[in-house]
Image (cartoon, rainbow, N blue to C red; front, side):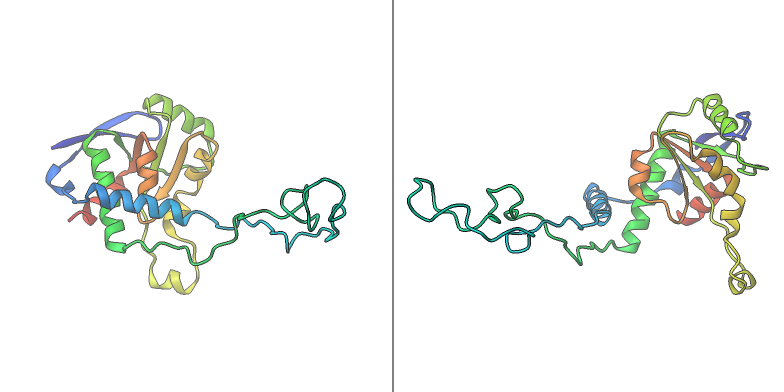
Length: 226
């Protein structure tokens, strides 16, 4: 059994959460994780760098000097790359269709594995609830200090399911409304991120020194591990 520390928003310690270690058995090889992280970071690139060659720069095509009689090397145009304002040789150009597809099942398995490892290594604590009457950054800073949480932290919240009526009425996500004040309270805290369980990515988990997961979010995560 694994015992995770559980706190409320006032940094008061509550009863530990017991997790059966067998529920955290998930498989992901080192190569799978490496390929996933490389693809994830590659897909974040904009590929928008653009430079102009000698045929594209807005520059005179006049010869810098006479062809013969000056003792200098022959030059054809001021737009040549060796002159100031000239074109760039083999410079970067915009690239398209550079997206690397990530298999959905592999992505889910890798994220489950990484979160499971954080739990096994006791680098995760449970937060009882995130209900706040209004944004309170000072209160959240006090919570982090009271729980002695490491500097780089990732907070994972549960995702509430929308009912059919709410989908028709274009209502906002229930979980987004529930965590709204909480998210506002932590956005000015350095090295602190918030993500919903179904949208968290493995790079966020790897970079985090400490995971903070809501009690409802932990319940959803354990259901996914079955």
